[in-house]
Image 1: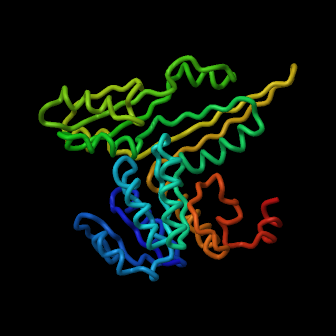
Image 2: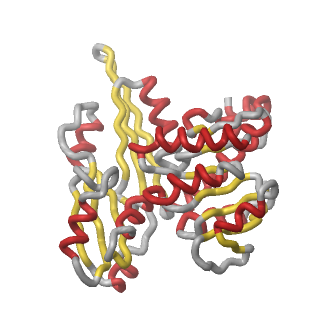
Amino acid sequence: MKIGIVGYGNLGKAVEKVASLNKDIRIVGIFSRRKVESTNPTYTIEEAKNFKGKIDVMFMCSGSERDLATQTPEIAKMFNVIDSFDTHAKIPEHLEKVGKACKTANTSAIVCCGWDPGLFSVMRAIYSSIFDYTECFWGKGISLGHSNAVRKVDGVIDAKQYTVPNPKAVALAKKGLPINVAKHFRECYVVANEKKAEIEQSIKKIPNYFLGQPTSVKFISQKELDTKHNSLAHQGNIYSYSNIDSDAFSSHFELSMTSNPLLTAKILLAYANAILKMQKFNIYSALTPLEVPPVWLHDLSVKELTKTLC
């Protein structure tokens, strides 16, 4: 598989690292708006058009809040694409835009393909079809999308955001009870030199990320951010529960990672195999992981997978 990488932040570097460990993948180029250094060839995003027909799948690794909403549809006009767009409220709109680009260009796309949305979306779909009650929690951990949204605020030099489950909400979910408290807290650690009061209010008003959610903003030095908040660990939990008369059924799915971007990269690379299947079957559209058959993630045939996994 010949791949390209658009965006060279934490996720772009993670995709590069995971891809470099696979002898069946070749990185054709890394495309960025800024000048970057890598052992692989680097180009500007504008130069991507010169590689049309030379890249099997383009990995879109920029931020969701401002970049992927425009970049993925544009790149899909030239290449098969995959992204981890994670602004949940805007996923239907994003899916439609990318789908239209694919139909016009005869390309294929899988979007919203991280661990959540993505892997957790698939697990929630399965669990909620079986159990009467399903709740999902994220954290405690660093959220790449939320951190990037904070860094986009004028005056912010650097920032990290932790998503923290509310213990009271988790306790209710474990019992299959309605949640009547906030599910998560948002903890922002921000480096800024001035206008701190304005920056705090701007952060708390960001729609789809912080608006309406319990959010704290603490201003710290760059040194403290680099030394005390340099982890990229995260985790997530899904709790499901049902009862029929005196019989109760429950399930707990837990995902833990010391590197959010590396796990996201591994998921993206698995689903990139499905894009090749989409091209084989002339599926010129955009799908989410909910619509992708699990067998498409593997190189083995359905018959071989049935023998080993059923």
